[in-house]
Image 1: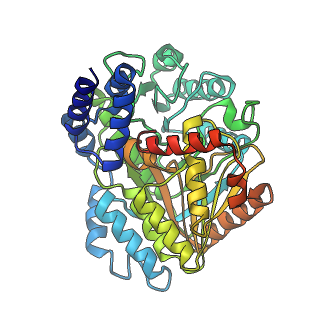
Image 2: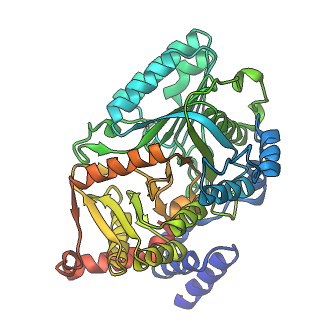
Length: 472
């Protein structure tokens, strides 16, 4: 029986092309959990079907496809990236994302950094109330709780006024939120659809691939992107987590156009029978708002190129002074682990901030394992003690930064659909650095001794979780 199970496990795992680490992790699960493991694989281990990948990949970048073509032709010319305004590293980053993601460079944006959930929803609600034409919402989590109902009722009011409201939500991330939650909105002309269908359906064998993006676009001129979802816990109302520390951006300017295009591609892949076509009102002429240049970069299992991870690696490799990272999940693959280690061992100050408490036990134990491993390679690890750290931020030398939905883990790089803003602005990057340093006042700098005194059982859980890290 053992040999039959082993042969079945090998055939099951090797029939799909995947990374070696993920292959071994699934072999481990299928071998030691013969029945449960195969059920898990059926729902969360199977790769996206070819026709689904094709459908997602081929969605036209509505409204910006011609601009992408133009920028690819002009990326090395002064009119696109003036040398006096942007560094060589930034120029290379822009080219990387143009080539891998068709991510246009948008300039003259105004960016506001939001780190508190109450402020985030206050600002968001103010902008939604002013909407005249459309509101597009895409969240991994949209809970049926107090803030979720407040947001939904506001969207219903706008729909009643004639504003077009569209919502994409992830059914697994929005556990407990049923389809009927949005029925009244639909009756008023709004639309709400779950990405990849209902996670409760037994026909849905792609539970492992989730829409982790967090986007709101209002009238094509204001956009929100970052780490906050829609739920009471993000306002610090959950006693389990306490204060919720996250980072979000409110962007007014041309970057909203790039977010809009991303939303349309996701909508058209989710609801192919009601696809959105180009309309001028979706892409209005936006006057100059500020001085920040931004690329909105997305990644997901529909493409073998891990675009956001490549951006992280490129940025870290360019560091001359310091790298600052905030992430709730620290589970780097070999390439990112070596990049972080190389930077730290070369004299660059690499500081990583992680939570003090878990929201997913296995993931947190794997995070602890990699925190210790990076500590041994001169990386500084800080444990945020003032609540839960959910921020996804990378800052390099106070010049270039990234804020978005992608964590420093396998899942964000390979399995989730993510979206990040890469910002080429020293002022914004320095603001993010200052915020990091303020958070350090509420953090504990970890040492090797902190891990050495842990129990043998705790160390075993960390090692075991690390073995499963490619599929967590």
